[in-house]
Image (cartoon, rainbow, N blue to C red):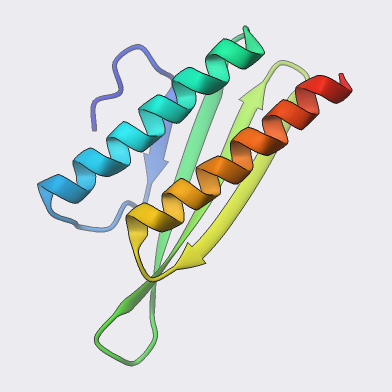
Length: 105
């Protein structure tokens, strides 16, 4: 995945079609850009994906996100059946936690 100048790392991304990968890349980039405007410092975002076999035809996905910036580390995770919606939900929680962390100082 190409994130340009953004400091974003992904690990264990499951095999998906190009449309799904584009949605994942877009979600990570837009969230990183929003967070960089709020925090105004060097950021590092790490996204770890996991796929669980549940015995049926569908696969359950979980996403663990870690945002690091000077002096603080914020984590968020979520799980569900649709990878893109799980990622969006985890990013929303991460953004909220980061904003609260910056406000608390």
